[in-house]
Amino acid sequence: MQHPKDIGDRSTLAIVLALHAQGYTAYLPFGENTRCDLITYDGRRLSRIQCKTGRLLNGSVVFRTSSSYLHHPNPKIHSRPYHGEVDEFAVFCPELGSVYLIPIEELPNECVAHLRVDPPRNNQTRRVRMAGAYEIARVELY
Image (cartoon, rainbow, N blue to C red; front, side):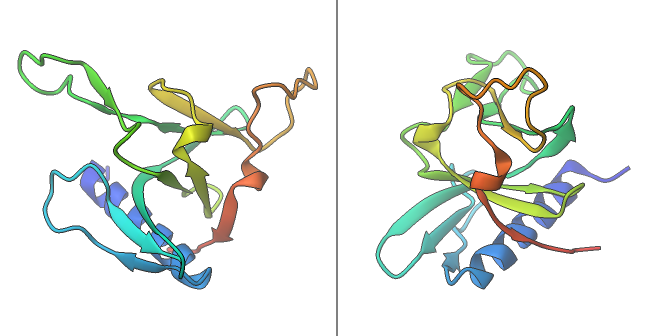
């Protein structure tokens, strides 16, 4: 079984490779307890990026959009969203080898977000985020 930190480090590596291939410059903030994992520059603006590992479940890439504090003894809060603290989520899905870049304002202020890989069976389109609209690259790490 892989340690969660190793999984996160591999996802961050895949994301940095994908961003570099798209012409972004990536900067790594110093320290372990920062709210963003990367700062990117696209030639026009800086952007704070939170890296996440997505999992392919039932035709969607699913990833967390808040930090969990449930592993702390007696947490004062259970989770903390990233709104106002990052500009974008970068998500690597190991099962697909895909990297997605999603502006935070396009995500709900909830704990989990979904990017549909397969179209919904009921043909619903309202409030459905299709993964292809956010994919920036495919990366092979293994």
